Image (cartoon, rainbow, N blue to C red; front, side, top):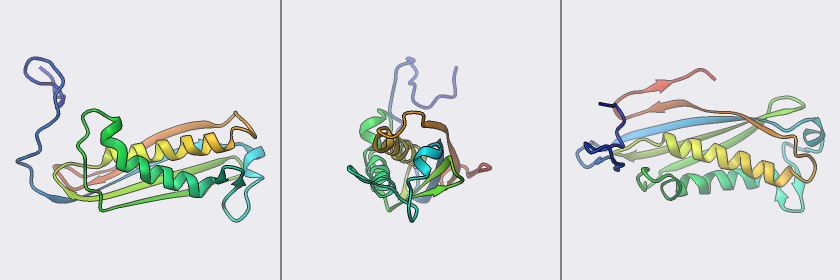
Length: 159
């Protein structure tokens, strides 16, 4: 019928049973590209922007890490995981754009792609929230998985 793993034989939602899977080292990296605009980027000093709400990138990094840990509470079919590590980085690309990367590591029975994707999305939304007083022309342009290792298959996409 279908290759979807979250649908049972009666075509109803289910959480995948990972009980028989082997524990392996798994890692996933996602990226979000975001247009901030010259008006906002011009306010940055030493790769961050201090606002009344706090430092933008530092706050976004913490929000991304928190989001990774909360993924199973936000996405119904995601398993709660014991995360080994999360690394969120934010790079200013030019006078208008930034890139946010989130890498998640685990030793477990299921992958961490959704956690990495959730991390970059929440980091981007945090930046939007913290900078919207200056401009609401920001655009979260692209979010995608870059790499997944461990488990059944490895995937490496181009940046």
